[in-house]
Amino acid sequence: MTLPQAAKLLNLHPATLRKWIRNGAPTISLGEVGRGHGTTVDLEQLKTWRATRAVPTLADHDKRDTLSIVSTALLDALKRDALAGKAGLTEGQAAMVVLVIFERCYRNIHKAPLTADTLPPELKPFGAIVLQSIESGSFITSRRT
Image (cartoon, rainbow, N blue to C red; front, side, top):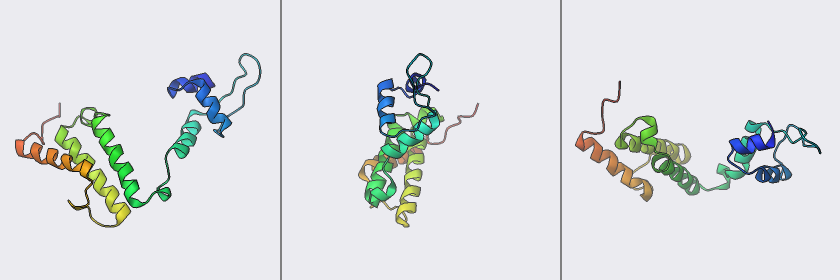
């Protein structure tokens, strides 16, 4: 696909993609002078290249930093990306999903169970949301149609 097409799909300015290419982003062919002879790129290769440069590897962080990145991403999914609404869940169910995923990440990284003492402070309110929704009876709803 052409550079302007890729830029539009990635919500970027074409100049940004040209900068990426100067910094080593993959291309199918570099452009030449003249209309219809622009640079062509593979969108998936471009996304992969950018992801490997933008996201630090786990080896670059200690375990605490890695879990901080994970907890921030989960909170963003819950709050900014409206996880509950998109997944057809109640707020309590979505909070439970976030906690279960974080617990799995914690166990895989630390090789130990997650406890109330090791739960990051920013995730503790979600335990309260889950508990409140269970106690109020709103945790389980009939969402089937």
